[in-house]
Image 1 (cartoon, helix red, strand yellow):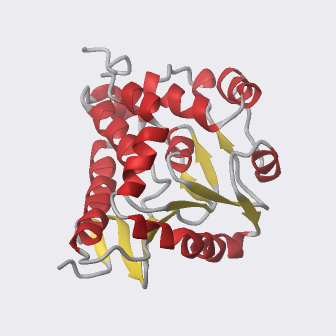
Image 2 (tube, rainbow, N blue to C red):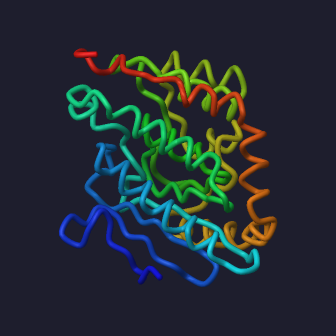
Length: 244
């Protein structure tokens, strides 16, 4: 049995913390601006496996949900591009992370406490529900300004989660959506002031936690909902790596 809180990837290299509050699991990302490296992706995947193992070990299905929250003014600033370009297998880990979270076995809520850029935006959108800070922070895909292409699975996830106009503005303009704009475009479910983001995310998680009582069916329903995105997320993508 896992002892919580759990430091990940280790106590010595502590980039995030997985804790438990009753029926809720809390994944707190707190490494600088939470940029994705292979190690960071692996740590989140370990957290997901820990929660999933706990879920599967329950004799009877029970209320359960996962809340992911960032740190200070940053939810996540996206990929560590230097690492992504220099380490060819990186995208395999990142796309696997998105696929695992998108089809996770219990309800998931992103507490967007600040900026969610590029890969951080994708992380938020891979959750079932999103609560965003209303007084500061943007959610955006700024690949057009880097410039950097999008993996088919990333484009597929964006396409599914928003209207065609919002998709165009996000991808081709790199538009930085404020919280109010994100709410108006149905990118997020709730917007609240900074101090209320985490409590509201937990409130929303508690509301939907009973749906975990459906057991593995909850995951199966998401796999059917997102079948096209899953297929695209399984497409190998190495265009960030010049040596491939």
